[in-house]
Length: 179
Image (cartoon, rainbow, N blue to C red):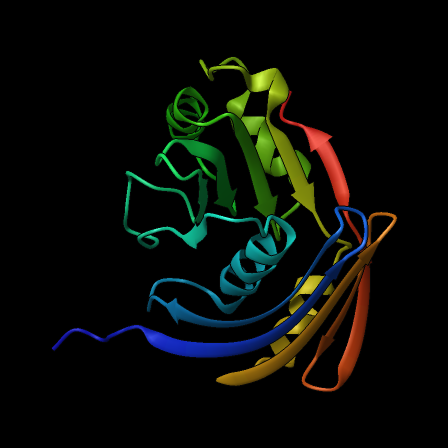
């Protein structure tokens, strides 16, 4: 019998002062058996940091047709293609041809994430952003993870303050180009 996804529920209070986005969210996040907790936490943060009307989690880690997080307008056009982890160049090329904007959130060393893309064909690669956190930030958050978690995420001047189940962590938001 195949192992099913583990459902995590997050009650999120979001205050992104940099973008003027404030909302209370209840998110049910399915963690596929092959997905690490670090990937799932990064996916959750990517969702919150990109939060806008029309946002949704993609079909899942095994889907090649959608990213981890996607933002669509009311017509169904893709506004943002949001990858998590270390996507390959072909996936970024595909996403950047479909979406107005492509961003990658990673819990890994961003220099190691972008290195395999060098010399590969990626549509509009100069517009792709790679966002990462301070070393150890995601690992600290993973250690606090529960199946039902309360989250307060505050963003101000590219600094993240994450309160996860009563423990506060902080990290700078690092942004670099894909090339």
